[in-house]
Length: 442
Image 1 (cartoon, rainbow, N blue to C red):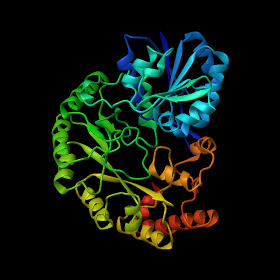
Image 2 (image 1 turned 180 degrees about the vertical axis):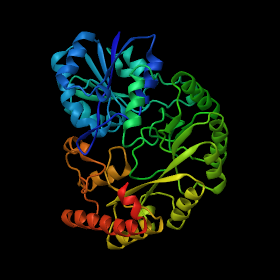
Image 3 (image 1 turned 90 degrees about the vertical axis):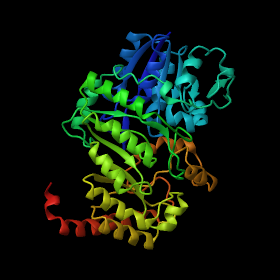
C-alpha cells in the first residue's frame, strides 16, 4: 500500500514557525512501517509550500491513504487541508494521529473529513489499522466513522518496553535541512552546532492540571539504548549537540547520574527539561561534566496556593535557590512561566515581580492556554467557559505568546488582564536592565 506520511506546519500567534526539531513521531512510525508499505513523505513544515503546490506533489505520488500528524494548535490548518484531500481523492482514507486527534477525536470525526483517529501511542495501532481499514472494529486504540456515527474502540495498552522500538528514521524527511534550520532558528539553543533532537522516554510522573500528555504514566528507555542512538547520530550525522524533547528528563537521581555517565563519553552539548523539586548540586555537577548547557524549568508561578491548585508539587521556597544553584554549576536555567493561571490576582502579580527580581531574570511569560487533554480543559468545559470545542480549536494557533488567553481564568476583566501583564513586564524589565544595562544592547 502507498502510504503518505504528512507533517503539517506549526504556528505561533498565527505566524508560521520555522522548522527546528525533526518530527520524531513520524520518524518512529516510519521505522516501524517501512518494509510493510510504500511510504511517501510530504513535509509541509519544511517545504513551506502553498496548498495548491502540495496537491501537485500528492497527484504525482498517487498515495492510497494519508496519515497526518496533528497537534491541537494545527487544527485550523488541518481542517481545510483534509477537506481538500477528500474532495480531490474521495475514495482515499485519511488517518489523523498525534495529540490533536488523541484528545479531540469527536471533533475531528464529526467536523472534518477524517476517516480514522489514532489515539495515543501509534506504532502498533497504525500498523494494525493499515492492515484492517475495511474492518477496523477490532483494532484497539482508534475512533472512526461508521454509518454516519462515531465509533470508539477499546483502549490500547502502551508499549511496555520502549527499547523494543527501532530508532526513529531521520532520513525520511530532509535531515540536513532540519539541522540547518535549527542552527538559524531563534529558538535553537546551540547556534552554529549540528544539533538533533532525541527522546529518552515517554510521559511524565507528575500530574500538573495544565499539561497535556499524549502518553499516560512514565516510561523510560534504558541508558544503554539512548547511548546506542547517540553513537549512531554522531557517526552518521556528525551531531555536536542534542535537544532532549521529553516532557521531563531529570526524573530521579540514579537515572540522571547513569545518563550523565553515558553522555559524558560523547563530548556533546545538550539541553533537557528538569524540575525544581528533583535537582541537587550532585546532579547539576554531573550534568555539567557531561556537557549540559541549559536546563528548562517549568516554574509557572511563584504563589504557593496557585502551584498547589495546579498540582505542581513544587514549593516556592525552593525555586530561586535551585535557579541560583544551576547558574553556579555553570548551566543556564531556562525559565517557563505562565501568566493568568486560575487564582491570578494582585497579590500573585506582586509575587511574580518578586520572583523575577530574586531570580535576576528579565520578564518572559506565556498566557495560560487551556489545551485539550488536560484536567484544566475539562474543568473549563464543565464551567461552560468553552461551549463550542471546534471554535476553540480553530483559534488555538493564536496561543503561547498572546497577551490575552482565549479563556480568561482570572477575576480580572480582559482589558485589565492585558494592562496588568504589560505593566508587569515593564516594571520587571526596568529594574532588570538597570542591574544589567549591557544586556539591553544585545
